[in-house]
Image 1 (cartoon, rainbow, N blue to C red):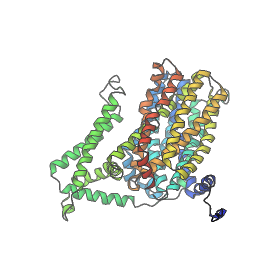
Image 2: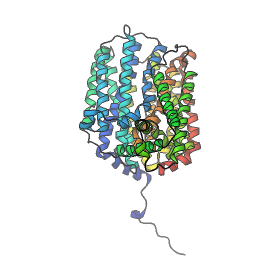
Image 3: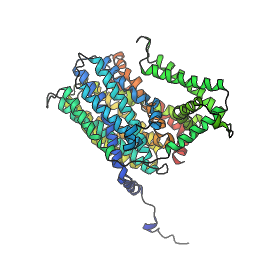
Image 4: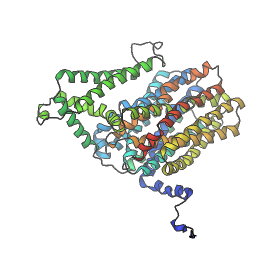
Length: 540
């Protein structure tokens, strides 16, 4: 019998723990620190126009349903894909020349947020609620646009083949987001509590303006990026112009009409649907109808483009092109091509399935997050309790778990991370239901916050990494914003009705949180159905 000698230790593959820890090196890339602070700049506006504004309105005596609907100003995060193509195409004049395309957009939007905070400090919600909401909405628009530029900057900081660095960047931006939202958000809540300093909310907003101004140092000190993105976009635009010059005038006119209708419907919705009464705009009938109209128009445009894309422009096509063809070519390249490229790259069936999964995955977390602060106040926790556990504790817990989640995603893949974190997220929501039964128990509150921080970090890191790897570098801002907007749609439009759901349940918080847990199931089922295709997508 031949003796089998033990394999030398040096020849053995490293164990799972060693392989996991070995991936820490990816966090020491020079650009990861910049991404961390840019993530903080993304998270802090949620303190300004969500956390602080909610508690300010609650302290001012506004009704629960009113506070919930005021939260709908965050709709800008859900629909920022509508203007994200402009962030891809337009350069901001002298800011673009000084700082480069992406950094100019980031710094410009951060300046608007700082100015908005200073303006909010001049109003009293019990006297001037309407102007306060308008200014908050402007801040939300600027913050959502800042997110477009920051996410594109982060993704473009690494090559498409550097997927492990991209995963590390997803962890860094998540840890940074929670540093801005929870870590920096601790101080306004703590200072506003009468048991501590008892600062007035106008003074708090002056402080938050200064904090946001400090975050502007990150893009100012970061290195300028160079990209061939605009050259590629111009080449695509020229191809469209040549193809359009060969089409009958009637077809091009119909195409332009469809594009203008698409923009008109979107603008009408953004302006609050003027001409309709508030009773006519119900979220369960009006919004789906509006989405269906937009999808029908977009479908017509994409079908037209697929029809003409099989043609070959003749040599004289560009010479025959008029100003009309050039304008139409610019509109197609800027507004439609990012979406068309996404479906061309992934296929129609898989592309639609991916978008549906992105919409469903965090629906339950969205409903929970919208009413969590209201729940804490009604159960009996003070502002200091909320600041200590929901902000300060969540901050460091999320940072630690975000970094660990990034290591796991680097080692085992994003799809497995999405599945495991989704299951854990549904289970964690049940802890809030238990808290509703027990009452204001600090130990249970602390345990729930730690568990929720773990699942939120894991799911967010996997979610961000998953969306990032789907983006084409020619239309980074447009495609990423489209997918993130779908993911946050429930957190804004749909979750704005969460207060009505609690009222409909007669204030039964325990049952409400059980419902939010069940909301996770459809997304997990879809993920299981698509797991094989998604793993192939991850490895391509």
